[in-house]
View (cartoon, rainbow, N blue to C red):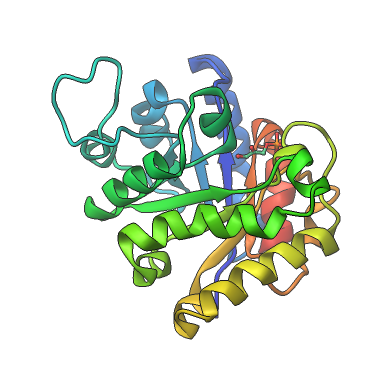
Length: 250
Ligand code: 13P
C-alpha cells in the first residue's frame, strides 16, 4: 500500500523570520495531519535552520537541487553529500524551472538522479509537459522521454526507491490546476509505462501531482487512484493552506 507524500517546494522564497513563522504554524497543526508523509524543501542556505526547528517532528526535509558532481572545483554548486550531511532525505531533480530557466536537459537530470541515489537519498523526479506540448498531443511522448532518460541510466529498479512528481508546466504557479481527470490520466500513463518494465515498481512508486494544488482542490486530486499526494509550491508558504493539503492526503 502506497503512503501519500505531500512535499512543500518553497522555491526561492522566505527569510529566517518568515520561515520560523511558517514552521511554527505547520508544527502547531501536525497532530491533525493523519498518516500522510510530510516534507519541506527550503532554499539550501536555510536547510540546517529548518532541520533544527523540525527536530522531534515527523516532517522530512529535502533540497530543491543538487550538483551532478560529487565534490571539487564547481563554484556555487552544492553536492549531494553536503545535503545528506545536513540531514535531508529528499532532493528534487528535474523541476521544470531548472529545465527551462537553467537549461537542464534530460541527461543532466538523469545524472543528478543517479547522484542522489548513490548517496542513499530519495530523488523526487519531476516530469511534465508544456502547454504547447499538450496542445500538440505529445504529452505522453514527452513524459516517456523524461522517464526513459533516467531509466536508461539507472535501471527500472531505481525508480522503485524514488518519488515521481507529475507537474504539467502550464499548471505551475498559474492557478490553472489540471483537472483531477487530466492528472489521473497522466499518472495512470506513468504507472502503466513503469508496469511494462516492472509491475512491483509500478505498484509501489509514489507519484505526486504538482501544479496549483491548494487546500481547496487537494482532496479531489488525491482521491484519484494513481495520485499519491502532491508537490506544492505557492500554497506551501501558507501554513494553513499547507496543513489543509496534508490533511487531504492523510
Ligand atoms: P505551484 O503549487 O505554485 O503551482 O508550484 C508547483 C511546483 O512547481 C512545485 O514544485
